[in-house]
Image 1 (cartoon, one colour):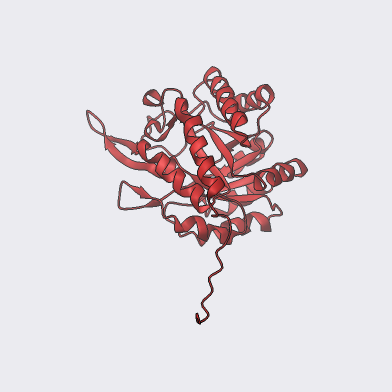
Image 2 (cartoon, helix red, strand yellow):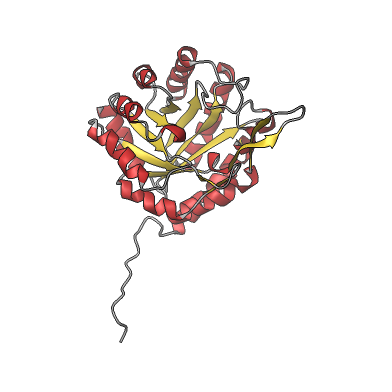
Length: 289
């Protein structure tokens, strides 16, 4: 846990924010190695602490025929190669308790998917690995729920936890981001992360030719959510990027084009540096004479 605590403290101290970025799912070793190198170049140039993100299995898919990734065994081998080759810490998600132990041997941050943020056994199993735990707020949850979720991690003996806003269901096929959540999530007493890509999903909101549905998204609004998040003063930005988003096998509509990553991050850094979002505003309600 010592190494995890050192990384956790580094991320907490990051100014103006740290970056969790990569692609949605591992498509191939060649693709992930290339992408990791390019994302690292951008983050290094801008001085942002980076944790590279990729999933080995996307278990929560709209269709049973959707691409899921290489699986845990092959996926962890690829993520370990990313760490060794590029010298980057990595973050990946788990869906079942038994996955936590093998994932914890490779991943520096274990991510709990939004739909599973209340699953006590999964949270405890993840916590016991000693790795940093990033819990995504369920689309169906109030921000107050995340205080209890974070406390489950601490109660299991792991103080290294962060919580992540990724939107709230608005009707059947849409998500909205309530900026107040960035403030309220601070009540969890841990770093707050804004997922500025998944929060623009339109779950099962895209009809396919020949029948069926898939998830859509509002990629063009990613800058809008990013600007809002850094102005409020989040500690970290989570985002998924792709070098060919129109042909990405998973969540293409909400992956940010790699060619625009540096440009967007430069703007977010500039906003964060002039904002006082991380400082609480002291409101004086005494009578004004």
